Length: 385
Image (cartoon, rainbow, N blue to C red; front, side, top):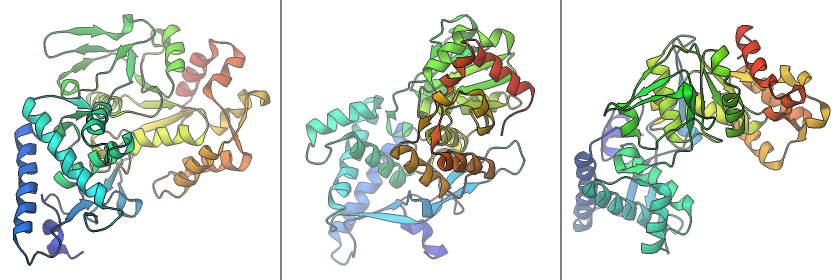
């Protein structure tokens, strides 16, 4: 696409070097939806318009994705999308329903913003399943269409009035200070920790105070609760945080905020030694292609503490598991990525060559209190990548 036609290809212009989604107030998002409708109506009224039924969207493909690399070693790199476009067309058989979904999604977002509400994508699904069952028959249709609208209007998902259900929690040497003088001391909580709200607007209003030296990102809730039960933060000054699996937006957002608030506090990830564990780490570290317009808002400089290939000697042979087809599929996707660090690629290659995977819980063969000692030892020895 020629340089001069970049701004014309989308409804809303932005930085020509890379694309991003803006955090906008409801009135401006509603105005952008109105502009989209007016442009469409104007095209309908013009018989010479060649493509009245086409919506230009920023392409969310790997071919249109690059990595904004850190200038310094400890800076953050993040995924971003360039100005290549895909289209949703009413005249193409495979696209017709996706085209209609975009308009239906904008219609419901317009109503949500007018009412001052926030809804989850799951709530949206059931509403749209009831109103338009021929177009929204599964959650995937909703999730993809939300990202289509983000690509079209160039605003964040939260700006559309949509929040993700948060599964995340944190605990340890940190105090949260809310906008209405509420105060949470996370060092005295039970092992379930403090539940992270899915409302990013509320999370933006929190301030933090902490004497921790490390931030430990844990893949699994069971491991998080084990470490919290052991009060690891009493002898290793740290904050524990988990999304209980694949990272949700709210957990990524608060982790990013913590990294900005405490720039000298390193973030160490504790994940399973399998392709999914590495994929989770990379999502925290770089963001995701599907949300490439917003990834820079959530990316953090995450270091891989464990499990890693060097730790396999600590695990009994009986605790290894065979890689599953899904593992191999994830590994193939990661290995094809142009972003993967060489040391990460080496770990992933070892997994594929051995055909094995290992879970963090395998370290319990040395006793239930071994995990905290393992983490502390690796941090002190600088054993991370």
